[in-house]
Amino acid sequence: MSFAEARRCVLEQVKSGRRRPAVECVPLPEAAGRVLARDVRADRDYPPQPRSMLDGYALRAEELPGEFVVVGEVRAGQPCDVEVRPGEAVEIMTGATVPPGADAVVMVEHMRAEGSRVWVDRVLEKGAKVNAQGCDARGGAVVLRAGQSVGVAETALLATVGAAEVEVYARPRVAILATGDELVELDQSPLPHQIRNSNSWSLAQQVTRAGGEAVVLGVARDRLEETQAQIGDGLGYDLLLLSGGVSAGKYDVVELALARFGAEFFFDRVKLQPGQPCVFGRARGTFFFGLPGNPASTLVCFEVLARAAVELLGGCEESLLAVTRAPLSEPFRHKAGLTRFLPARLEEDGRLRPVRWSGSGDVPALARANCLLVADAEKEEYEAGEMIGVLAL
Image (cartoon, rainbow, N blue to C red; front, top):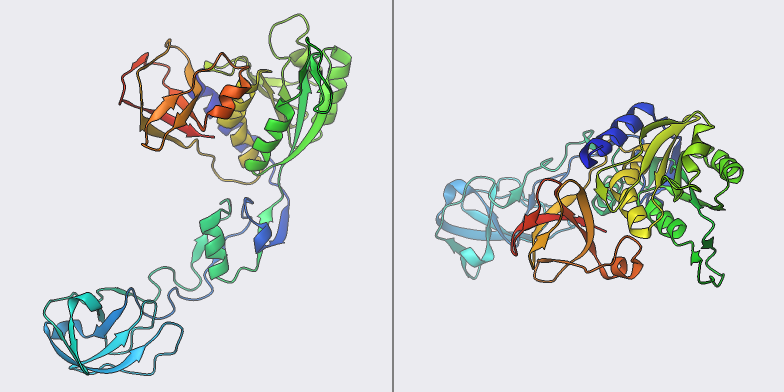
């Protein structure tokens, strides 16, 4: 499949085949990164009264330009006990309630004051520099929808409407199973023909960032019966991520083991680099991904394909791949036919610089990058300064 077809396949299959997760009620500080299970409504109008957008004087717009007598002061956080009559103005602070009778606020810089009088030589529209009552939200209106993830702005809004406790979906439990005879654990000293199991731990962090609960199952050796047994354990979770063992080699037994569980394979190769081969399917009602064993391939396949599954299984209504664009710092060329997500750095001047790397096993190059360059499968050459896709890491 092309990358676009593969991503569309993941979204469609998971949306149509997922089970709604359980609902939990958590304190607001624990809701960060969770997905709302219920709509959230405003408990009153916001703002509850007309309020000033700046420091200045509240008055009647129809009397401008003109001279006004200052009859009082209104500060933020205090009730308003003054009324503005014709020819009068009230000194007002940012966020304070605009008093009855006034319908505009003139900023301090646009008037002249002398004693208890002010002069304004300009015209203002009615409502100028005033936030009308309920302009942000009306009482009872839905301000956050079920299926939205709770980020910084959502937390601020939940706190604003007094949502001390929030109903959210349970995090999907994601099993992570690395495969390969060459793998040893983190606390072991690898022999020259061995490597430490890094993929399980990088995947665990990616799963957590996507809103899931990562469960590392260890390592399955390149033997069919052992791999099958551990896959069986992994299929008891909401999603199974396998790393390695999905190529066509003599000892790549993951697909054979999955087939013994009656697995349905939606795709087993994507026109993507790094990221070949990449498998997606379902067995015993559980979705699974067979990710390539090289670290960069594992990282990319999760970020652009499997992450969407974690988010959707966690109750999100949609999962967006947030690709932006930036100008290249230098010319870039690649062979057409594959969508490429390659290590790069977005520099302080806003330009994107490709990171030199030696292939999908080059972990130090990944660590030097702060984003991925996204090269279109149909476009071979990019000039310096030309816009190209960027995916944040």
